[in-house]
Length: 414
Image 1 (cartoon, rainbow, N blue to C red):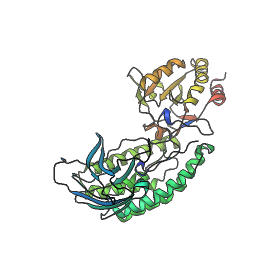
Image 2 (cartoon, rainbow, N blue to C red):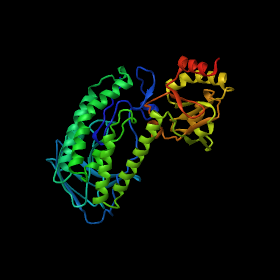
Image 3 (tube, helix red, strand yellow):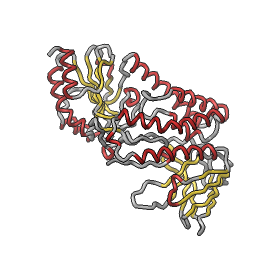
Image 4 (tube, rainbow, N blue to C red):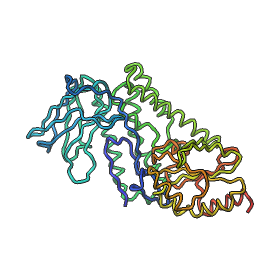
């Protein structure tokens, strides 16, 4: 049984994610699927020398939390930085001061955990200089009990947390997600997530430069590609960026949002080319020896793009069939371009050798699921295959076993 809990700081989550071999699960279509989305956390905040005069104050009460330790942190591209910490008094009251340089995404972490190996107890904060924030928390339900007040971003975040908790409650009610087809599960996810998205869109329309949108806007980004993506959400993200450019010119967060919007626009263009014009997006990645290999170099041949990983059980089971068909058709302008979602280079190389994957084209970013190819090629589980013709146009997807063999027989007449 797979029942993965999530906490609020992970933003929008889906059961349909698996970022490593440890998290691999199966659905009823026998493919490894993603159970968590892993992405770099660039909070956009600027840190001050901790010895400088504090410019943010957080007052609050932690119910059922006498003598507990609370830690104010910033997640940056250099890792997590501790700004300050405080111990609550006998009644759970606390005052924590810290020095920050600018607006950004911060977090308040409860140092104690209720049980061994339990997920971190963390709540998000979209702090700005001179904030005087008040918090009401509960030690026993830390991630979901928070009430914010005292700042311009407090009320939008309270509303967001309410909608997020409803979504989490529904998500946790699904005892066995493997019983659903991926398409059906994604449809359910989008339906249950819709009220939260609608709340966020309304907040952006009312106050587009509110610091709360640092957090809220992430829910308007594509969860699993663009198939079910509401393009109006991209317009809202552009509104946030425009407002931040006016209110926070030159701020790292403004630049970060602009970069994300540009990537989403390009990704949507690639999606349109892929779905409407059937053009396979370029893949240009290193092979095990570090040499860059390009999908476009194989123009003039039929190419099976095979997304797989050494840790993916269904992929390894399918590999003997792929090898057999490669040996049968390799002289007929047929090639395989294997793209691994591995993170460990040695495990990747060993799997290539162990499974006898004798073709020349093996590439990987070695970043697992953290690749834009997932959105470009619109898949959420592996093995995933895409067959393209000599002109680089997609002619079939998700071919495995007998289905792959029948298609190749149709193309090559044997």
